Amino acid sequence: MILADSSPTLLQSLLFGAIPSPLVTVLYSLALIATVYTAGIGLVALLGIYAERKVAGHIQSRFGPNRVGPIGLLQSIADGIKLITKEDLRPKDADGLLFLLAPYLAFAPVFVSFLAIPFAPDMVFERHLSVGIFWLLAMLSMEVIGIILAGWASNNKWSVYGGMRQACQMVCFEIPLGLSIIVGVMAAGTLDLVQLGHRQGGGLHTWLIFANPFVPIAFIAYFVASLASNKRAPFDLPESESELVAGYHTEYSGLRFSFFYFAEYAAMFVVSAIQVVLFLGAWNDPFGLVGLYYSKFSEQENLTGLIALNLIGAGIFVIKVILLIFVQMWIRWTLPRPRIDQVLYASIKVLLPLTCVLLLGAALWQLMVSGMPADPWSRVKALGGESFNPWRWSHWQRQGTVGALLTQSILAILGAGFFLTIIGYVVRSWWMGGGIKKRLTDPEPIPDLAVKV
Amino acid sequence: MMNLEAILFYLFALLTVASAIGVVMSRNIVRACMLFLGSLVGVAGLYFLVHAEFLAAAQLVIYAGGTLILIIFGVMLTSRSLATHDEPRRREVWVAVPIGLVLAGALIVAILRRFDSVQTKAVAEVPYPTLALGQSLVGDYLLAFELSSVVLLIVMIGAAYLSKARPREPKDER
Image 1 (cartoon, rainbow over the protein chains, first blue to last red):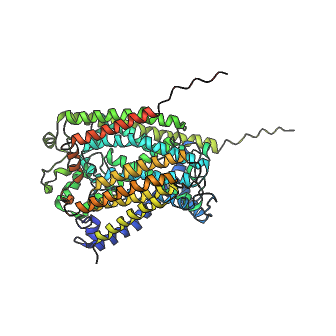
Image 2: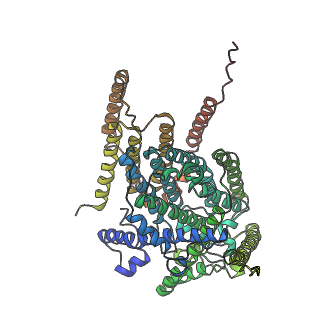
Image 3: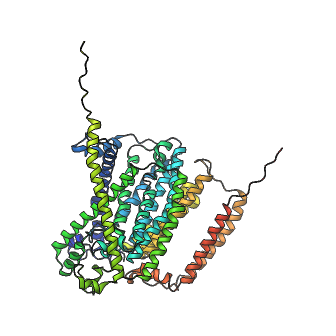
């Protein structure tokens, strides 16, 4: 039942024509996972690690990797080969089975959560997951078990400390994380990731982050909580090198160690993807063109157009995710690490009340000010709705309330201004940093002051 | 060819039952926790098979992500070393066996009695089962929903009371 009633995806219908038989579907799914997803996640991790070192280099006025391959691009592959060829050490007193199992337990949930991420309207593995975002949350909380287990099974006090810190950090931050997600979900009215994307297809102001004044704050709360649940600095206490050697993965070497790295960078991608889908308009551009043309093309059944649109949407999606990952790295190399009690304080006494207030405010907003002004997909003619064009004012008036539209527009203008300011700042510091680095690395030749005897 | 759904059902059922047996048999409490994880994942898979996606995800969030982590956390705080293998005491066996037998008997009787008369509605026909679930939770079953949160509130107050810093006993001044 679960396999039979799911309609074929765009790629499936291209490959097999009509609805394929269950066996074909299973084989096709396995092949897709084995090739596209595995390779994609590997690429995400490799490029993520490279980017992290490069960003760190720029922020600390040095070069970062620049020897292996052009501008150091192959550095991660070199590191990977090194890790694979290293000996797989296992401490004598470790709990053997659990020690071997932990890296996979940390990596598998992240892998599975990739299957729910919608890169574009039709570029998603499971399109009918009605609990999409909740599913991702579940997978993120499962990842922690692997980390805790690694710390415990290593039978090393630093590792156990790391595992315990991860446990209490996750338990604390999971609540603000979930609550801030709910604030966004309430504005959209669905948990389905694909539907969430379609809901935001009417231009910048229909992105959920601008849906009401509470969501932008929830966006920031989610970002902080996701850093903590993903043990990214400044919340990297589970592996804080200056106190715990390497925390939970102190005893790991070789390939198993690299699994933890893969899990961390893939999880960075996943939490950023949740943020993009839930708050930043998923695959939609700021002008609502993707949403508009998607509804047009699917009415006309224009296959070429749909494929092109999916590719463009995936590109937009990935660019947004990369921007968020960049911010995560930026924060990592800027902020110092707090103590564990400060981290827990930040969660329970700051984030938790804040998100509760946001939840209440967003709920009241839903009751008082109704209506998202633009929702092109749900009003596609083919599905029984009227056609909607975000570029036509008369459609606007028909669709939504003036209050919501006004708030959303103001918030969108403010948000766009804020974003452009940040981008300008980053570009400027990049520019100026180049000068500083040049001065630091190529010092002026010392003038020849040789005293003539 | 066997029905694909049936194959998946037996796979998940095997996972659930095998790891549940493992939990009971294991003497190492952390390994028991990990086997418990297998059991939870199996049950979540079964929920997925009957299209109860929300229930499956909730199962993973609450039990795997919350309860299990708390159990491991508690074990880490209390147990002395990895090598602790807890042997049951004789008195504990005498208490545990009758309780277990009564519970098992009750479950078996209940299952046998209800097996024929259970009416299940096809969830798959509802386009968004999660939506229906949410609406019935805060609609028809609002009272039960709120009462269960009162239970949680009581638990929280109890925990806060237990962990409250006790007034220090005055030191002997000798």
